Image 1 (cartoon, one colour):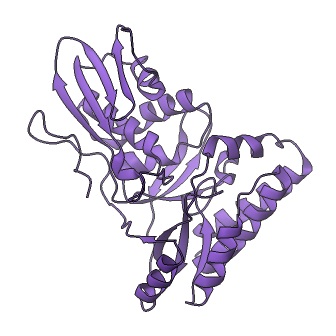
Image 2 (tube, helix red, strand yellow; image 1 turned 120 degrees about the vertical axis):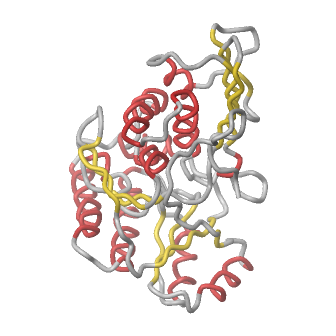
Image 3 (cartoon, one colour; image 1 turned 135 degrees about the horizontal axis):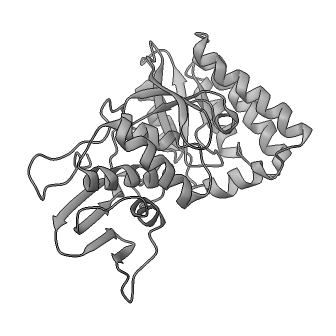
Length: 312
């Protein structure tokens, strides 16, 4: 999520990008239904001893009758290269869309998104569904919720001259914990003030505002919201990275729930990218190659092959 974090839950627009990291679902026909999350165990229908909980699959299959067989989900491409750390790229959303595409044999985002949105929300208990929309649609989208059931608006968005780079902060963050802390102050005057501030930043994406200026405003807005909620949405790592990035004419902001995971570097030139990447990597913060992926869910043409592009 490039802009609109937290405020998207209050109806503000958000700018979301799908990147070239994919969750892959491989389907093998069979007589019984089983979903295996690679590295997490398997869940059978009907249940068997030793089954693990796979909340997203369970929520998805409560509303449909999938083809029987074995569905194997692999989201390892959405982990960090070193140590397999969570990057904060929406692996559960991508896995939900991949599983649905495999079970329903469709890649139509208008079919995938509403079903995956409802299942993901039921399993997670909250969330904007913006990551689900990015996985289903691909590309860069402007996303706006219209209520609990479905968003009012999903449309493609052109980034123009802005360049996007992502940098690993070195620490994973719990989206659920951070969102929970922010929601705990909902209804307070501080919540209203800070959400309105973030809403104004998000609305700047429709007004042609300079992304570096919006990033600066979002940085300050998230910092203030975190202080009000008693959590670090903006960390000391973010602040240190920001000072380094400004040396190269860019700016930086947390992505998604903040607190860690990936941060977004924004600029309008590639001139300093290589030097900036070397400097940050030497300090333990690699700049990751995460190009925009224009395609959403994809199906393999040959039965038994991975349902989606293999991880790069």
